[in-house]
Amino acid sequence: KILVLLDVHLIIHRAYHALPDFSTSSGRPTGALYGLASMVISIVKDLNPDYVIACYDLPGGTFRTTMYTGYKAHRKELDGALSEQIEGSREILSALSIPLYEVKGFEADDLLGTISEKLKKDKENEIIIASGDMDTLQLVDAKKVKVFTLKRGLTDTVIYDESTVVERFGFKPELLPDYKGLRGDPSDNIIGIPGIGEKTATTLI
Image 1 (cartoon, rainbow, N blue to C red):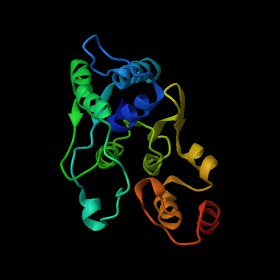
Image 2 (tube, rainbow, N blue to C red):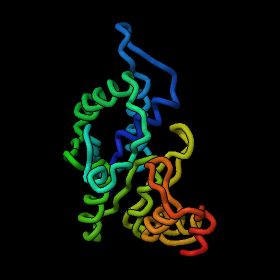
Image 3 (cartoon, rainbow, N blue to C red):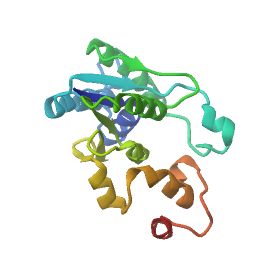
Image 4 (cartoon, helix red, strand yellow):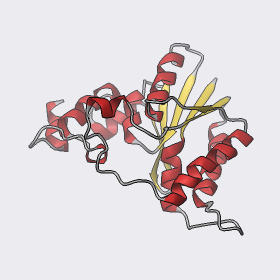
């Protein structure tokens, strides 16, 4: 059985910046919603999944901000038009009978990881995570858990399995947290070790 896990926030964010500012006759923004719907249709057509689950971030802090107050501290608030479409995405996915998973205090990434870890133990399952967030690559597990990610825009995509991750980074998926810890991650305001960049982190690992 093929299960596709959707990282909705990331997909909509990418669509919002990749597509024109479409809107309804009443002025409701719909560009990101159009991108999400198009991608879901493509996923169903190309990957032929048996199941699809949508994972959401909820507003407010998570256990990460409790551990480290600087986590994502530099990020701006979402544009009103983007925030409105994230809420609107619930209508689209519900209409497609795709269940919505969200847990207060946790990110969608945590749900993607938890579901993957629980279900990969069944050898009958193949899990594909649809996201543009490279952090999800740490979840890749041989041929059991793969990541369907956006390279540019919404149509340039690639599927990562373990061999593809090794080809790109030079080491296996489970070492990606160490890599990020060494070099830091500016997108999440994670500092890393001073003086260590991508090349040195890769060499050390």
